[in-house]
Length: 432
Image 1 (cartoon, helix red, strand yellow):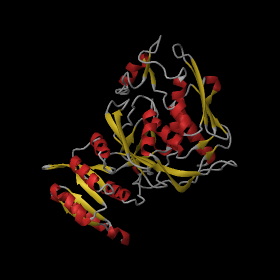
Image 2 (cartoon, rainbow, N blue to C red):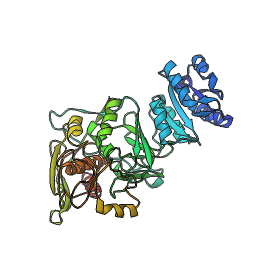
Image 3 (cartoon, one colour):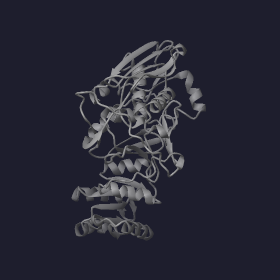
Image 4 (tube, one colour):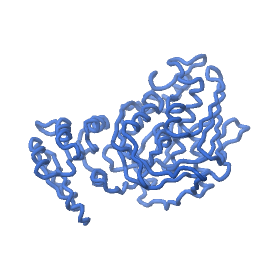
């Protein structure tokens, strides 16, 4: 037992005796000091007497509103972390609780792994992130080779980053149609970007190994945990240099207005915490290409002194020829040039997507709808907004190697499947 854990007190507040007993036993076995109560009216007094570092608070108790009690606790003792628990929760409840000051939200029946992960994070202990590296449900992990890295002379040294605090947003899944939310939690160095559900009992890392599908969006899956449409969020994390983050989400990242503007706002609202832990780029050593230029659909990457993406598209009118070149110069350039560019789709494809069970959450406010003659529902933010949005997707997909890439990408009429194919070819070539 870690002797330091014996000094860490946890207060459990739940009206179910069995829940308190089982959680108490688990946490005692891990070396924590645990006190508990089933009476919500005693909580503030017990906090004053017992000085807990963490409160596990049931959101639904007789005669007690858990959210209001949470607000009282945070008002009186703002430094105490409070984790809300509920057997009737969903991602919207989690969003509400986080907005009210909760450190996190987990659901009943409590998962042992999920509970311990959350408790360790609350105390600032480096968590073992479940089996997020184990593909296909296996508990074994593939040995990781450190990526081929180098720095050009004069380039700034990179450090790992996370957020300074948790932030939340809510919206609708573009393809699932499910009303969903998003909770972003800081993680310690070397954790990576990890997606999990409310219970936190299973997770999937944002990594090429766990790409499940690339049809109209990039989706990840591992050991029962699946999350769709990750590319816009990952593009933002890539551009802001966020290396460690826990993302709680229900099945699909919300599409918001079809762009990455809200994700930029979220990161800026939270603030960025840069650590002393070093970070490094994957440096492209030679040219790699997927597809043939003769076919009209291809994407390539070649050595360069920075990360850049050039996208070319040729569609019939009203889209026509669009081309844009973007060179990464930090979050400011991404926020101004790329983040506002929205998802787009064609009216003729809607019936096809519906038959595939996709685009159920498509609304006139969250993507650009195009028919054979005109753009139906909005004014473009840029004359080349469609090409810029394709760049947004590429930036997101290219964070699935887990590190920033230094190289120049050129793409012509490509999509997510091509992006992932190029990533796999790059990884094989660099022996990552």
